[in-house]
Image (cartoon, rainbow, N blue to C red):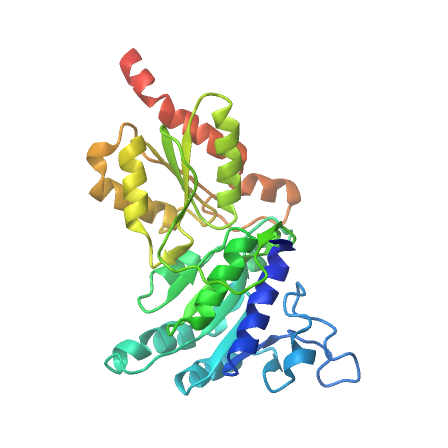
Length: 342
């Protein structure tokens, strides 16, 4: 396998699916660049250069540089999906979803339900999310719990380049609207990625570490922090299972509950705000269905309930890092000893 960056893996997934299926198109702000002027028509490739090289290969009919109006081009993509195309929309920052939210949650998410299962909406909305890029509070939020709440949408959070390519190919081939979250701090992350196309099924979690003492469930970029914490804790004699759900909707509840039943302890790591988050959702799921298996209270490691700070020092403290995950694991491990001492 070749070593590729998160950025390259996403680009390759789009390219291979556009080569395979002529119905696949891509649209968004600055995804080619230079449109309307005399500059190079592929000068940009989006703010992170993810789509660079697609326009020269597929042309302006399938790689559409849009104006700065998400309400119009997201709506156009929803209509295109309903009438036979398979659009990929780059929403740029997830924080901009407010101006086109109606098209996503009131239209695309409901077409299958409104028309008795006869309508399909094969739409992929790619969005950057997450802190750590010094982009301030209006460009750094983790809004995947909000989309997970809405029936009819599928929500994907790849944690590395291999996952990014396989999950995006699955998203493009899926007949339902898929919200695809790309953490902006991971675009330069490298990993082994097959050159050939492959799809990773939705709703099947990936167990990245196996252990006996604590289950850690983490999302997106946080999976890498959880893996690092698990490796550090192993040197201290604490064995952790790390679960990457990959998708929050559908959610692989079976794997989560099975691993908690085996370890008896749970730590959930979620970069989103703590209220109504995936962390609280997983905690509720386990408390309802595996309470008897728990040997210690569930511990949540999340960002604070506050906007992402612009100050680099404060932003670093805001992110749920490796040290915080290790402290949470040690806390649940020490619970029985504290109880015995009391």
